[in-house]
Length: 407
Image 1: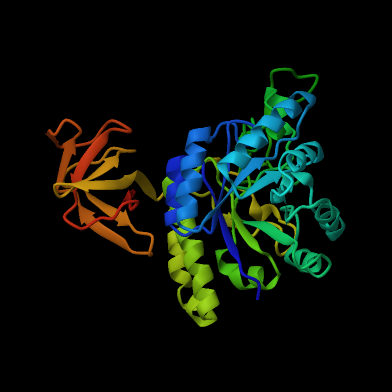
Image 2: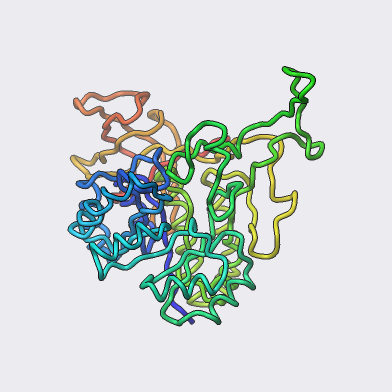
C-alpha cells in the first residue's frame, strides 16, 4: 500500500503553523506572484523563510504555487523568483504553464515540480508526457472518477505521483480554468484574480424587453445555478487509498486557521485510523463527520469520484456558508498563568468556549479572566486582532485554537 500524504493549504504564516501542528504532511502556499489566489494574504519572502523553517523542523514539506497561465510579461521575472525560492529551500513548485516549467528547470534543475490541475491532467498520456519532462507529480483534474484514477495508476511509472483534491470548494470550470470571472469583471481567474461568479444569482433578460429581468429557475428551489456543494471524501478514505493516489489535497488557500486546522485534524485522524485498522476507521466515522461539519461549508458532495454530478450536487437557494463555530484566536506563549492570544472575534469573561487541540480533544471551558496588552483587566474583547492575555481555568498549549459554538 502506497504511503499517503495529507497536503493542506495555507494563506499566511499563521495558518501554515496551524496546518503543520494539526497534522499536515505537507503544506502548499503562494508567494506574492504567480499563484492563483491573488486575494489571499500570501507569503512575503521573510514569512516564507520562517514558514519553511518551522515546517522542516517538524518534518513537514512546503510546496509553492506558481500555476498562473502566464503571459509574455510574466516570464522575465520568473527567473528571479525561482532563484529566490531555491535560496529559501522550498520542497517543490506547483506549475501549470510549460513556459514557466522550462524556466524553473533552467534556474533550478534539481527542483521537484508538481503539475497543477490547471494543466488539464485528465489521462495517463498527459501524466507520462510530464514525467518524461522531469515532473515528479501530477495533480489530477477534478473531473476524473475513481475508476479513471485507478486506470491512471496502472498506466504510469510507479515513481510518478498522483495528487488529487479530496476536500473543499468546487467551482464551475474545467480543471480549474474558469472564464466567467474574466468575462463579467475583467478579473482573470487564470491569473489569480477570480471573483467567484459561480456563487452569484443570475437572471435572464429578453432582447426585446430590456430592463425586465426574469429569474433563472432550474427547479423550484431557486436560482443559484452554478453554486456547487463542497467536496468531501472523509467517508471514502479506503477507496482513495486503494486507487493509488499519493497525495490527498485539501482546497482552501483563502480559509481561516480554524477551517484549516479542523479539516487537517479530521483527515489526519481518519487516514491514521484506517492505516492502523479499517474497523477503527469505521467506528470513528461519526466523529469525523461531526468534526468536518464544524468548520464552514456549503453542504457536501463527492464530486466526480463516483460518476458525473447531478442536480443534487448544486445548492439553489443561497450562496452562503454554514458556520457552526466562530474562530476566536490561537494560543501563544504563557506568562504569569495567563496565555497570549491575538483575538479574532469578540468574546467575554464568563462565556463558555472550546479549546481545540491537535490530538482531537475539544475541551469546553469558561473564560475566567481577560487582560489587555497594557495589563488592565477587561470584561470583553471587542476589537479584532487585539493582543490579550487570558485565563481559561485549564492548561493550554501553544497553537491550540479557541472557538465558540454558535446556536
